[in-house]
Each structure stands twice: as C-alpha cells, then as structure tokens.
Image (tube, rainbow, N blue to C red; front, side, top):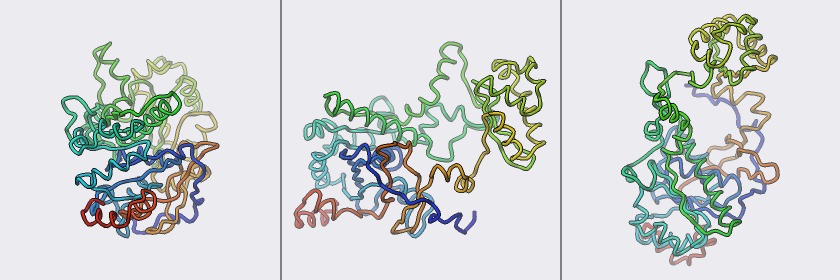
Amino acid sequence: MSGEAGFDAKELPPATRGRGPLEGLRVLDLATMMAAPWSATYLADYGADVVKAELPGTGDPVRHWGTQHKGTSFAWKGLARNKKLITLALNRPEGQELCRRLVQGFDVVVENFRPGVMERWGLGPEQLHEINPRLIILRTSGYGQTGPLAERPGFGTLAEAFSGLSHLTGPEDRPPSLAGYPLADGVAALTGAMAVLAAVYWRDVGGGTGQVIDNSITEATYRLIDHTMLDYEKLGVIRTRSGNRIGDLAPRNTYLTGDGYWVSVSGGTQAIVERMFTAMDRTDLLTDPRFRDNANRIANVDALDEVISAWMAEHELDYVLTRFDEAGVAAAAVQDISQIAAHPHLRARELLLCVDDPELGPTSTTHVHPRLSRTPGGISTLGGPLGRDNDQFYLHELGLPPEEYRTLREAGAI
C-alpha cells in the first residue's frame, strides 16, 4: 500500500447543492453503523433536512472504522455527509424526554436498535405516534422486528450468510465468501430509503398517516437471489457456488488477457454471444452444437470458458476491448480504485466531486446518484466532528433556553 496520495481532489469539479426534491422533509437519524444511517444519507443527498444524533462522548462506531487520517475516519466522511450532527443520549431519561420533544417537528425517524430497545426507552412506535401521528419510522434490523431471531444482533455480514447469498458466492471448491465491502448494508440502505419515499407519498399524496417500516437487512439481501428459490421449489435443486459463473447464462466470467489484465464478459443475449464469436474470428463456434444457444452453453460451460480464455490470452487488453466495443459485445475491464479515479468516462460523468473539508482539506466524494434533471440535490458538507451542530440546532432551531441547554449537557443527555 502506497503512502503517497493517489490524486489531487482539487482536480475534480466542486460539489454543489442545488434544489432537492425532498426539501422540507425533516429526518431524525437516531441510527448507528451503516445500513440505517446510509438510508438517511440518500434522503439528505436529495435535500431532506437530516439531523444525525449520536451518543455523547463516543459517537457513532463508524467514526472509529477503517482508515483514520488526522483523527477522522474516511468511512464517516461519506456516511454522514449533508447531515447536521448533534449528540443525544437515548439511554438517559433526560435524553429520552428530549427525543420525545424533538419528534414533534420531524417527518421521519430512522433507528436500528435491537427490536424492543426503543420500546424500553419509551420511544417505541406507539409512544412516538401519540406525539406525532404523521411520523414515519424506519426500523432497520438484522432479522426484522418479529420472529424467533428478532432480538439477535444483526449486521450486514451476518445477513449475507443468513440470506443464502454467501452460499452462492465464491469458487465452487472453496468456502463461502463474504463481500469485501458492506454489500448487505448498502442494499438495505436503498430499500429503506425507497420505503420511506413510498410512505411519504402515501401520507402526503394519498391522504394517509404515519406508519412503521420494518426493514430487515436479511430480507433485503435475499431479494437479490429470490429467483433461486424456484429452482428448489419446482425442481428440488439447491444452487451452490460457481465462482464467477452464474447458472442462468453463459458465458459469464472474467478472463485474463495476454498483458495481465482481467476482462469481464456477460453473454446476456444470443446476439451478444454471436457478436463475440465473430469478434474473436471464431465464426465456427456459431454452428458448434455445444454453443448454439444458452442452454447448451450452460451445459458445456467448461469448454466455452476454455475457448474464450485461450483467445484472451493471445491478445492485449486494448485490442480485446477495441474489438469487443466495435462489435457491440458486453465486456468491461476489471478496474481497481486507481483506474476508476482516472477513467475518462467516469471523469466525464463526474462520478467524483470535490468538497473543501475543514478536517481533510479538498476531498473527493461521490456524486449524488441517481441524477435528477430538475431537482438534483447535491453535497454541501462531509461528516464532521461529534456534536458539530449542537449549538445551532438546540439553541436556535429547537429554541432551548440556554440554562436548560447547559443543564442537559451537564446531565450527559447531549
């Protein structure tokens, strides 16, 4: 691992904050770790007013994750972007009472405590809906709010395993694999944000009320592979690991070029495969009974991969990509993070923007995605110090008297 900077973020376009479609939506983010706070980040990117509450003194555990530079976590910078950062001790009676006062002015509460914890604190849905019937409560947990495992601690890593995803991931002759990144958390973050928007639409357009969203990280992850249940239900087949291959189509793999680069290929349609055979100057394969259609290619996938691998090994990456691009073949180079940072397509798309961060200086952050043409939202701040916005929020937005504010701080409630 190099100790030198990979690139200068000042080369990137500056991040801006345009009008967002969720302006006026107020979100109280009481969650920790990844999946649930990530849902709130998506809402903040589109203009929602998200207030992130953390435990005084220690803050969110993500602050202490991964690479630390100048006393701050890189993971925290993106996860907490666009949020107001306050402290609030929900495990203290004073903090619980303050939270009940806060929810009067919010549209959405995001939490991910183990099922039953919020109820023990007097902050369960029934109590909160008595205070604010229009409140939408996003509850994210490993296994859901009900069922025998509901109260078990659950993380994305466990969800990958329990959902069946890990059973399908990795080489067939090796143990089940876990993603080297928070895959399940990311999926659950998206489903959580989507569900919030659905609930807001029903409440504000459909004449509905507030409601509770039960977002199970396990079930969100299982949705990625739910079609494999039909293999078992209808045919008694239990899919297992097949490396880079997939049981639905062939070819689907990565192949090594002659100059040492990997290329990913997906034969998603018959036409793509036929164009690939032609680009490889192997028109003979078009009439080879082993490869004439998807079913036969799946049945003879070892032979198919051998043919493609042999051709790849004879050519350099640029040649392969040029030939495939000209022929309309679905292929892409396997890129590392340095290649992503420099790729002209991703630069043209402005995948990365620059924020002048008070702690790190000019720093890259990912553009808002997906892009909206008229209400794009944007990025104004990255994650910052613990309690950065306490004074502004409690004294000016909430209007706490200074004496009460001091009392709550002395009591450890904020």
